[in-house]
Length: 184
Image (tube, rainbow, N blue to C red; front, side, top):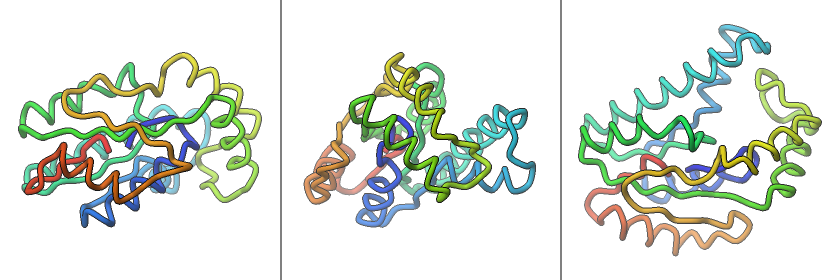
């Protein structure tokens, strides 16, 4: 599942994984465990981000190596997070189905600010409502655009998801017998 922060990716990915009976890995969950070990502060953030992505791709690879499809969710960076997917595609002949969630930049910014103010997010993320301006700028710069990957792309409006249709589309693109949704 790709797309910007606060766009509804985790909710959609969780439901898709449940309906497909697939393992589900979320980069933010990995980051939260790392924050609990190393602390959550600005100096640690780049290392925690890098480590969480490395762990995510390692787990995805171990699943594929065992012949198990997997759903992975993150706000993957369209400029820098492509090579690991291409490598997995090449090494495992994985069928990639990218489900991309997005909304207008101002709506993402508002949802990000509301989420940051709610206090429901793990404190390690250090999200503040005023960070919404940076999120909007990153979104508008193309940081969280669709990833240039082999395979299929399915754009999703998270405010109006037809899960039966989404499930059918993922199955059709991935193949009935082998559902691989690495970028989903």
